[in-house]
Amino acid sequence: MTWINDIIQQNASRIFDYPTIQEYCYLRIIDENQLQSKSIDNLQGEEETLAAKGFKGIATNIEELSIINKPENKRVAHYRHDKYKLIGISLTSDKNSQAYKHLQNFVCQTSAKEIFLLQKFFPEFQQNFLYKLKTENTSDVSTKILKYIYQNEFETEINDFITDLSRKELETIDLIILAELQSHFSKQAVKKTTYKNLSAKDMIIGMLENFENAVIKITDPRERYGGKTLKPKKDPKTVIKIEDEYDVQDLLYFSLKSVFPSMKYENPLAKFGGKSTRLDFVLMEEGIIIEVKQIKEIEKNDSKFTDQLKIDIESYHLLDYLTDLIFYIYAPKAIQDIDNFEELQGVRNIKGKTFNVKIIMVR
Image (cartoon, rainbow, N blue to C red):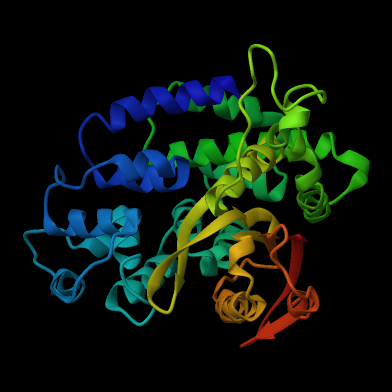
């Protein structure tokens, strides 16, 4: 895996030597934090700027979105002919826009490798990708790697494929496929060390249900100081305080990311009602979303939070890959009636989309 990362880094430093929309696409998948730190000011052209806003999740106005409907100019390549611009611009609009229609046409005409990239941002095209991958015969090494990952083909040749790619100057999409291979190897390693034959969902539920007990070591002064006194004589250890929702998320991120390396934090891919929404934790391959909520003791108002959860749950049917939605509610001494929350659990069918809702609470 170190070898794969070296190939990715060497080519990334070459490809992204100057500002380009390809880098924004790459970072949206690989490193969301680095993406958010990048400015769009150095990009050239209104199409690239709009696409960059799409990748960064920046709100756009009507004037900026007018680019979407501009007719083609024979002297200048239209954004629909550039997959990176097309994806980014499509992220700024809804599924009724001209950009999304161009995206649908692109899927019908292009290769499995390029549909793979599109479905990273638009999961509704995942089946198109899998079908195309199954039926496409190609000598392209990156596509063969995808066949290895998703169809268990070329197992004996995978090392040769990596060696072959190490000798070439790769494109951005090839780097993303190599990162997918690296993630695949990580997941395979996790599967080989599965604890008590639990599924990913069961492992996550177990970790969340034991979270309160596990963090006592760093949040309780007695435990942190060795179980003897609240006031150590010397070299006191820092006690971690859970003061808000972000503190809970940070501690959960450390725990979950250690076991599920492909997990995404604050994933911005979803669009609810035309606006970008960040999901706390996403394991797309497993179809699992984890949302973290905190209720403070001074906010004792069950109905306020259950009403908000009901509204939230109604929106998740838009995520095609979703099978399990887990709410982790950290609310020590703040819940009045647990039944108000537990009644939200169970299988939900919303506008033809079926998924399961699980509520885990710290009371």
